[in-house]
Image 1 (tube, rainbow, N blue to C red):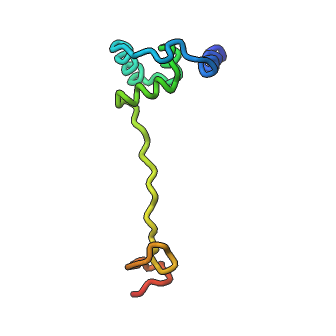
Image 2 (tube, one colour; image 1 turned 90 degrees about the vertical axis):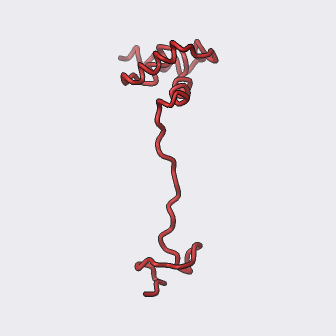
Image 3 (tube, rainbow, N blue to C red; image 1 turned 30 degrees about the horizontal axis):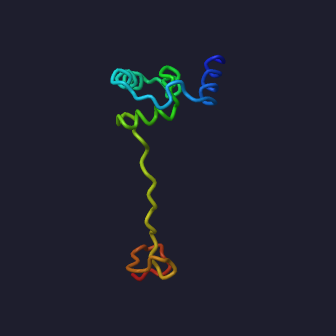
Length: 99
């Protein structure tokens, strides 16, 4: 376990052996298989001699790695004159609400 951890640390501190090499069709297929079997990005990076970012980018380009939902700002609930979004306030908890 400790040796495996040390391999990952060494990999992160140096340039990957296959840095900037193109991915072959066979490598892409093997990467997809490893990903579907649940292998981690660090393990795949060690196996292919590439950086973890290269593995992530390849999985992303193959549309295998699903990114989380984007962050969207919530619309303000209160639209009273105190808010920047004044107009048709229908929020009954608003101090300025007219019934």
